[in-house]
Length: 138
Image (tube, rainbow, N blue to C red):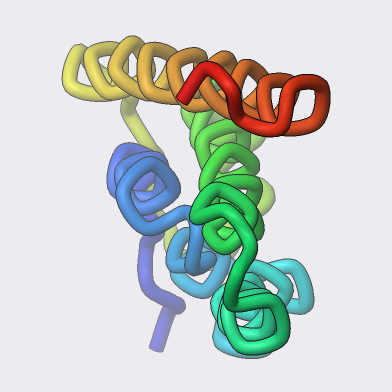
């Protein structure tokens, strides 16, 4: 029985939507992927921040999840922009099928870039606001 064929568009979609929890890593590499588990660990880390410093600004409470989501968006771009031959060699070696990227992947990558840029710029702006003025601007 040949291994299942991994879809590059679906892996990029998972990285965009559930990248903060590492769903794309588990889809591509299995349930014991170390970096996927690191993504999942951002949830208890956020819980620790909430539990240990309840008076902290809400931004610091969700910062571990936001950083993990930004990394997930970057991974979505890396997966989506990888050539089909290289993707198949890495994730579909024994499946016997070839990946064929088409226009839904291109639309997904544009959306991913918009989300990643917005999250990154917003995160940096809020972080500098909180660190330099104590949150005077919001």
